[in-house]
Image (spheres, rainbow, N blue to C red):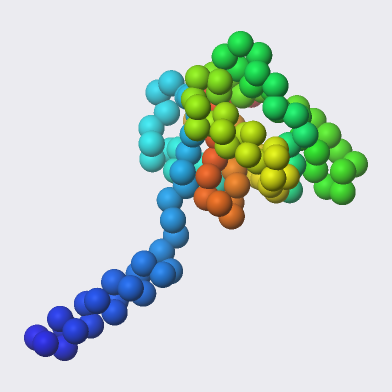
Length: 133
């Protein structure tokens, strides 16, 4: 019994060290459950890695972000509906832009969601897909 009680703190410390931290998700997507938000990296149908934000423009309640990826040869834009309504989402977008953070863009069409994910920082901004695939 003492052996089990002595091993419990060690096992707990090992678990804390190696567990995968949950994704901290910001953004407004009506009807999207918290569990789906946190599994965004695992349940996507399409991903684009290595994006850097070049612009963050508020358009009413929506945000238009410009991005560059690859070696700077390719550029594009993403519309994030209702992102302005979430202060944390706006803070992350501006911080990622200022820090030139490398992001992953994901689309989870089964859930009608797209997102920008900082895999290293375990943070993400999600939005509803503004069109149907």
